[in-house]
Length: 280
Image (cartoon, rainbow, N blue to C red):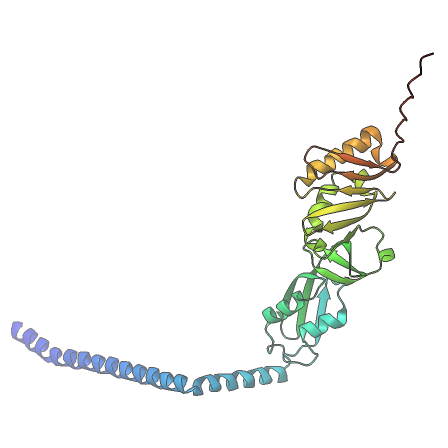
Protein backbone atom coordinates (compact mmCIF):
# COMPACT_ATOMS: atom_id res chain seq x y z
CA UNK A 1 0.00 0.00 0.00
CA UNK A 2 2.76 2.36 0.91
CA UNK A 3 4.48 1.75 -2.40
CA UNK A 4 1.29 2.57 -4.32
CA UNK A 5 0.85 5.75 -2.33
CA UNK A 6 4.41 6.79 -3.01
CA UNK A 7 4.01 6.09 -6.70
CA UNK A 8 0.80 8.06 -6.85
CA UNK A 9 2.47 11.03 -5.20
CA UNK A 10 5.34 10.79 -7.65
CA UNK A 11 2.90 10.86 -10.57
CA UNK A 12 1.06 13.90 -9.22
CA UNK A 13 4.14 16.06 -8.70
CA UNK A 14 5.04 16.88 -12.33
CA UNK A 15 1.60 18.41 -13.14
CA UNK A 16 2.00 20.76 -10.15
CA UNK A 17 5.32 21.93 -11.45
CA UNK A 18 3.85 22.36 -14.91
CA UNK A 19 0.89 24.38 -13.51
CA UNK A 20 3.21 26.59 -11.54
CA UNK A 21 5.36 27.20 -14.57
CA UNK A 22 2.26 28.02 -16.61
CA UNK A 23 1.02 30.53 -14.02
CA UNK A 24 4.36 32.27 -13.97
CA UNK A 25 4.43 32.34 -17.74
CA UNK A 26 0.95 33.95 -17.85
CA UNK A 27 1.93 36.50 -15.22
CA UNK A 28 5.00 37.38 -17.20
CA UNK A 29 2.94 37.75 -20.33
CA UNK A 30 0.49 40.08 -18.53
CA UNK A 31 3.32 42.22 -17.21
CA UNK A 32 4.83 42.41 -20.68
CA UNK A 33 1.50 43.42 -22.24
CA UNK A 34 0.86 46.08 -19.55
CA UNK A 35 4.35 47.46 -20.00
CA UNK A 36 3.80 47.64 -23.75
CA UNK A 37 0.48 49.45 -23.24
CA UNK A 38 2.06 51.96 -20.85
CA UNK A 39 4.89 52.56 -23.27
CA UNK A 40 2.51 53.08 -26.19
CA UNK A 41 0.32 55.46 -24.15
CA UNK A 42 3.39 57.39 -23.03
CA UNK A 43 4.70 57.77 -26.55
CA UNK A 44 1.24 58.76 -27.84
CA UNK A 45 0.76 61.26 -25.02
CA UNK A 46 4.12 62.90 -25.61
CA UNK A 47 3.39 63.20 -29.30
CA UNK A 48 0.03 64.83 -28.57
CA UNK A 49 -1.86 62.20 -30.52
CA UNK A 50 -3.64 60.81 -27.44
CA UNK A 51 -5.03 64.19 -26.46
CA UNK A 52 -6.23 64.73 -30.02
CA UNK A 53 -7.84 61.28 -30.06
CA UNK A 54 -9.60 61.93 -26.75
CA UNK A 55 -10.85 65.31 -27.98
CA UNK A 56 -12.24 63.73 -31.13
CA UNK A 57 -13.85 60.96 -29.12
CA UNK A 58 -15.46 63.50 -26.77
CA UNK A 59 -16.76 65.60 -29.67
CA UNK A 60 -18.19 62.52 -31.32
CA UNK A 61 -19.83 61.36 -28.09
CA UNK A 62 -21.45 64.77 -27.53
CA UNK A 63 -22.75 64.84 -31.11
CA UNK A 64 -24.18 61.35 -30.71
CA UNK A 65 -25.82 62.27 -27.39
CA UNK A 66 -27.46 65.31 -28.99
CA UNK A 67 -28.79 63.09 -31.74
CA UNK A 68 -30.64 60.92 -29.23
CA UNK A 69 -32.24 63.83 -27.36
CA UNK A 70 -29.57 65.21 -25.01
CA UNK A 71 -30.11 68.79 -26.21
CA UNK A 72 -30.95 72.07 -24.49
CA UNK A 73 -34.68 72.42 -24.93
CA UNK A 74 -35.56 74.55 -21.90
CA UNK A 75 -33.69 77.02 -19.67
CA UNK A 76 -35.54 77.94 -16.49
CA UNK A 77 -34.42 81.00 -14.49
CA UNK A 78 -35.47 81.57 -10.88
CA UNK A 79 -34.80 84.67 -8.79
CA UNK A 80 -34.48 87.19 -11.61
CA UNK A 81 -36.03 90.58 -10.88
CA UNK A 82 -33.63 93.32 -11.95
CA UNK A 83 -31.13 91.42 -14.12
CA UNK A 84 -31.51 92.22 -17.82
CA UNK A 85 -32.78 88.97 -19.42
CA UNK A 86 -30.86 89.61 -22.63
CA UNK A 87 -27.61 90.14 -20.71
CA UNK A 88 -28.35 86.99 -18.73
CA UNK A 89 -28.85 84.85 -21.84
CA UNK A 90 -25.73 86.30 -23.42
CA UNK A 91 -23.69 85.52 -20.31
CA UNK A 92 -25.08 81.98 -20.10
CA UNK A 93 -24.30 81.34 -23.76
CA UNK A 94 -26.99 78.66 -24.01
CA UNK A 95 -29.11 78.15 -27.12
CA UNK A 96 -32.00 75.82 -27.75
CA UNK A 97 -30.79 72.76 -29.61
CA UNK A 98 -27.21 72.91 -28.31
CA UNK A 99 -25.87 69.59 -26.99
CA UNK A 100 -26.58 69.69 -23.26
CA UNK A 101 -23.26 67.98 -22.52
CA UNK A 102 -21.23 70.57 -24.44
CA UNK A 103 -21.07 73.27 -21.73
CA UNK A 104 -19.49 73.43 -18.28
CA UNK A 105 -22.03 74.56 -15.61
CA UNK A 106 -19.20 76.09 -13.55
CA UNK A 107 -18.09 78.30 -16.46
CA UNK A 108 -21.68 79.41 -17.02
CA UNK A 109 -22.06 80.22 -13.32
CA UNK A 110 -18.95 82.39 -13.29
CA UNK A 111 -20.07 84.34 -16.37
CA UNK A 112 -23.50 84.97 -14.87
CA UNK A 113 -22.00 86.15 -11.58
CA UNK A 114 -20.05 88.80 -13.49
CA UNK A 115 -23.34 90.62 -14.16
CA UNK A 116 -23.84 93.70 -11.92
CA UNK A 117 -27.10 92.65 -10.25
CA UNK A 118 -26.10 89.02 -9.61
CA UNK A 119 -24.65 88.31 -6.16
CA UNK A 120 -24.52 84.55 -6.71
CA UNK A 121 -25.83 81.97 -9.15
CA UNK A 122 -26.33 78.22 -9.41
CA UNK A 123 -26.43 76.35 -12.73
CA UNK A 124 -27.74 72.80 -12.87
CA UNK A 125 -27.85 70.53 -15.87
CA UNK A 126 -30.83 68.16 -15.67
CA UNK A 127 -30.65 65.48 -18.29
CA UNK A 128 -31.76 64.97 -20.91
CA UNK A 129 -32.78 68.50 -21.97
CA UNK A 130 -33.31 70.91 -19.05
CA UNK A 131 -31.05 73.60 -17.55
CA UNK A 132 -31.98 75.32 -14.27
CA UNK A 133 -30.43 78.68 -13.32
CA UNK A 134 -31.05 80.17 -9.88
CA UNK A 135 -30.07 83.77 -9.13
CA UNK A 136 -29.58 85.67 -5.89
CA UNK A 137 -29.63 89.36 -6.78
CA UNK A 138 -27.98 92.22 -4.93
CA UNK A 139 -30.13 94.63 -2.94
CA UNK A 140 -29.55 98.35 -3.59
CA UNK A 141 -28.82 100.34 -0.44
CA UNK A 142 -28.32 103.84 -1.83
CA UNK A 143 -28.22 106.16 -4.80
CA UNK A 144 -24.74 107.31 -5.73
CA UNK A 145 -24.02 110.66 -7.35
CA UNK A 146 -20.70 111.04 -9.11
CA UNK A 147 -19.70 113.23 -12.06
CA UNK A 148 -23.31 114.36 -12.43
CA UNK A 149 -24.50 110.77 -12.83
CA UNK A 150 -26.82 108.87 -10.51
CA UNK A 151 -26.45 105.11 -10.04
CA UNK A 152 -27.71 102.44 -7.68
CA UNK A 153 -25.14 100.78 -5.43
CA UNK A 154 -25.20 97.59 -3.38
CA UNK A 155 -23.85 96.92 0.11
CA UNK A 156 -20.56 95.66 -1.29
CA UNK A 157 -20.13 98.86 -3.29
CA UNK A 158 -21.07 97.30 -6.64
CA UNK A 159 -22.46 99.72 -9.20
CA UNK A 160 -25.86 98.34 -10.24
CA UNK A 161 -26.41 100.78 -13.09
CA UNK A 162 -28.00 104.18 -13.71
CA UNK A 163 -31.15 105.30 -11.94
CA UNK A 164 -33.19 108.44 -11.43
CA UNK A 165 -33.48 109.95 -7.96
CA UNK A 166 -37.26 110.15 -8.26
CA UNK A 167 -37.43 106.44 -9.11
CA UNK A 168 -36.10 105.42 -5.70
CA UNK A 169 -37.17 108.06 -3.18
CA UNK A 170 -36.79 105.47 -0.41
CA UNK A 171 -33.02 105.27 -0.83
CA UNK A 172 -30.48 107.70 0.67
CA UNK A 173 -28.15 109.67 -1.59
CA UNK A 174 -24.37 109.43 -1.24
CA UNK A 175 -21.93 111.66 -3.11
CA UNK A 176 -18.26 111.29 -3.97
CA UNK A 177 -15.91 109.08 -5.96
CA UNK A 178 -15.17 106.59 -3.15
CA UNK A 179 -18.55 106.84 -1.45
CA UNK A 180 -19.86 103.38 -2.51
CA UNK A 181 -17.08 101.55 -0.68
CA UNK A 182 -17.95 103.27 2.61
CA UNK A 183 -21.69 103.80 2.32
CA UNK A 184 -22.75 100.56 4.03
CA UNK A 185 -20.80 101.42 7.19
CA UNK A 186 -22.34 104.89 7.43
CA UNK A 187 -25.87 103.68 6.75
CA UNK A 188 -25.48 100.95 9.34
CA UNK A 189 -24.62 103.53 11.99
CA UNK A 190 -27.41 105.86 10.89
CA UNK A 191 -29.89 102.99 11.25
CA UNK A 192 -29.36 103.35 15.02
CA UNK A 193 -30.82 106.88 14.76
CA UNK A 194 -33.85 106.65 12.44
CA UNK A 195 -35.24 110.08 13.34
CA UNK A 196 -31.92 111.63 12.38
CA UNK A 197 -31.42 109.47 9.29
CA UNK A 198 -34.74 110.40 7.71
CA UNK A 199 -33.78 114.07 7.80
CA UNK A 200 -30.55 113.62 5.82
CA UNK A 201 -30.88 114.70 2.20
CA UNK A 202 -27.38 113.61 1.16
CA UNK A 203 -24.10 112.28 2.54
CA UNK A 204 -20.81 113.37 0.92
CA UNK A 205 -17.55 111.45 1.22
CA UNK A 206 -14.92 114.16 1.79
CA UNK A 207 -11.23 113.88 1.05
CA UNK A 208 -11.38 110.07 0.92
CA UNK A 209 -11.51 110.00 4.71
CA UNK A 210 -14.77 111.25 6.26
CA UNK A 211 -18.45 112.19 5.74
CA UNK A 212 -20.40 115.44 5.64
CA UNK A 213 -24.17 115.19 6.12
CA UNK A 214 -26.59 117.65 4.50
CA UNK A 215 -29.84 117.88 6.46
CA UNK A 216 -33.21 118.57 4.88
CA UNK A 217 -33.18 122.18 6.14
CA UNK A 218 -29.70 122.88 4.74
CA UNK A 219 -27.71 122.41 7.95
CA UNK A 220 -24.31 120.82 7.29
CA UNK A 221 -23.00 118.26 9.77
CA UNK A 222 -19.28 117.50 9.61
CA UNK A 223 -18.40 114.06 10.93
CA UNK A 224 -14.94 112.97 12.13
CA UNK A 225 -12.65 110.48 10.39
CA UNK A 226 -13.00 107.97 13.23
CA UNK A 227 -15.43 107.20 16.05
CA UNK A 228 -18.34 108.22 13.83
CA UNK A 229 -20.83 106.29 15.95
CA UNK A 230 -20.13 108.44 19.03
CA UNK A 231 -20.35 111.62 16.95
CA UNK A 232 -23.77 110.60 15.64
CA UNK A 233 -24.91 109.76 19.15
CA UNK A 234 -23.76 113.20 20.29
CA UNK A 235 -25.74 114.84 17.49
CA UNK A 236 -28.84 112.75 18.20
CA UNK A 237 -28.70 113.63 21.89
CA UNK A 238 -28.35 117.35 21.13
CA UNK A 239 -31.29 117.22 18.74
CA UNK A 240 -33.44 115.34 21.24
CA UNK A 241 -32.63 117.62 24.16
CA UNK A 242 -32.38 121.06 22.54
CA UNK A 243 -33.84 120.71 19.03
CA UNK A 244 -30.47 121.92 17.77
CA UNK A 245 -31.21 121.41 14.09
CA UNK A 246 -34.36 123.54 14.32
CA UNK A 247 -32.45 126.57 15.46
CA UNK A 248 -30.73 129.26 13.45
CA UNK A 249 -27.76 126.99 12.66
CA UNK A 250 -25.83 126.55 9.40
CA UNK A 251 -23.24 123.98 10.43
CA UNK A 252 -22.43 121.54 13.21
CA UNK A 253 -18.79 120.46 13.43
CA UNK A 254 -18.13 117.16 15.23
CA UNK A 255 -14.61 116.55 13.97
CA UNK A 256 -12.97 117.17 17.35
CA UNK A 257 -13.50 114.26 19.78
CA UNK A 258 -16.07 115.06 22.46
CA UNK A 259 -16.71 118.57 21.16
CA UNK A 260 -19.44 120.20 19.12
CA UNK A 261 -18.85 123.47 17.33
CA UNK A 262 -22.02 125.18 16.12
CA UNK A 263 -22.05 127.89 13.49
CA UNK A 264 -25.04 130.19 13.76
CA UNK A 265 -26.87 131.57 10.76
CA UNK A 266 -26.93 135.11 12.10
CA UNK A 267 -24.17 136.06 14.46
CA UNK A 268 -25.54 137.95 17.46
CA UNK A 269 -24.81 141.62 17.35
CA UNK A 270 -22.38 142.56 20.07
CA UNK A 271 -23.74 145.14 22.51
CA UNK A 272 -22.11 148.49 22.20
CA UNK A 273 -20.17 149.50 25.32
CA UNK A 274 -21.90 152.21 27.36
CA UNK A 275 -20.38 155.64 27.11
CA UNK A 276 -18.85 156.82 30.33
CA UNK A 277 -20.88 159.51 31.98
CA UNK A 278 -19.24 162.86 32.31
CA UNK A 279 -19.17 164.42 35.69
CA UNK A 280 -20.98 167.64 36.26
